[in-house]
Image (cartoon, rainbow, N blue to C red):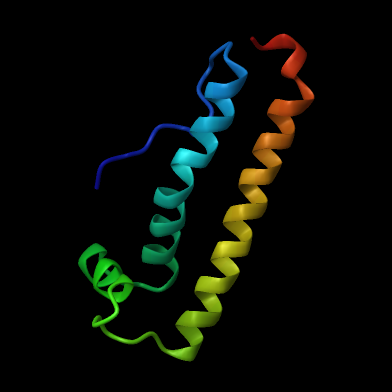
Length: 89
């Protein structure tokens, strides 16, 4: 699988830094689900479709935890960028 660059590149643009965090979030979320739930990429995308295979309750719980962790990590990254926004454009 193609490796995604870090979400916040070394840049002087405040908007670009924040944008990169949010644009990387879906891929980080997917990769974490693939790892934690031990599913393949095609299975992940089949589960997204309404007609795809159903998730077990354990998978649903794990996916909910991953979603919360992913969002908290993105918020922490944004807070770090916001705290140094005076150094950025």
